[in-house]
Length: 303
Image 1 (tube, rainbow, N blue to C red):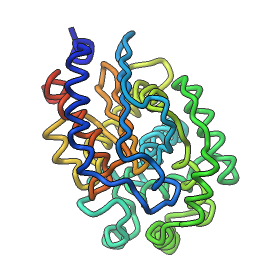
Image 2 (spheres, helix red, strand yellow; image 1 turned 45 degrees about the horizontal axis):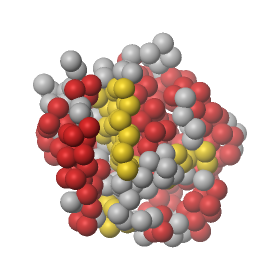
Image 3 (cartoon, one colour; image 1 turned 60 degrees about the vertical axis):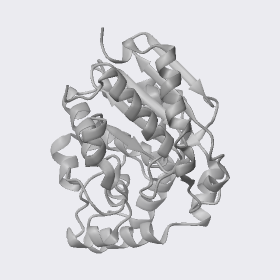
Image 4 (tube, rainbow, N blue to C red; image 1 turned 90 degrees about the vertical axis):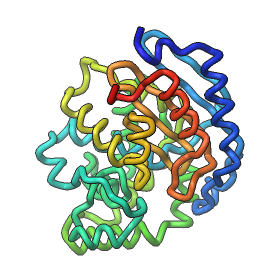
């Protein structure tokens, strides 16, 4: 029997206890006013493998995917334009600088190091199909919902909050991408990036997205799934990615909205919601949960 399908309810509850014991180590992001309203003690998990689903906690919570959307904008462009084109726009190298580092981008001459940090995600938002930020977000959201059977929606209240407190770091990154001719349209790129980060759903929506990345299906090119999983493994948790590749051994992506997605290639996916973050921007309880689960069930892709 494969790793995830061996999970028992008792083991699931032990992993959740471990996660809850870590919650107080984190802090809800207060950079965006609407995000700061989240309950720091919220926790939800949804696990999806073959025909089995496991669900526990505050599973009705709807949250903005924020950076957890980044693997899917990469996947969308790979599917629409091919790897050769897309990988000219962004690299696949890890970064040991924070996710919104302008210094890293300058050191790299304006070529984003990977698509999981803000510079790479803004560069790719610039390339999404559609004329305006609204068009691009709508087309992208429809594609994801059709692909995965999820029900993502744009959270207009969250978007207004993001726009009212636009990140100076993101503005500086976009300006530098524009100066170095890595953007076609600076304002549309930033607007699209902000909108797609405000696509919102539950842990079930996030896990359904993860499952299409994890498992062979008739819709996606296998090579594109492999590229996205590889970049998630090496870059998805920012400068902590290498540490967790060793400790957990799964492709993962976090978002400051509290979402965390892990794929178990060939088996399924795990999605958590836990808005209390560590200093890097990763959800503390969610990481603790997946670390405990991965070790119990020996889920690491490295055997």
